[in-house]
Image (cartoon, rainbow, N blue to C red; front, side):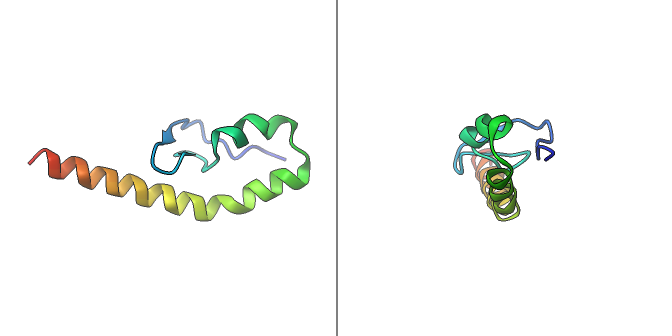
Length: 69
């Protein structure tokens, strides 16, 4: 099973998830040795997580803009 990694390896602090793929650090670490069922479990959670990461990034960007004014 192919890794969801997009080579954008940055952890979003508020969510604790990778901005590129939506996995947690522990999930990234376990990926290579995880059984297919576990990988599928992780993959299934990613779309919803990526929405949370995007929302978090938007909030952080908005806070940054308001501080610069």
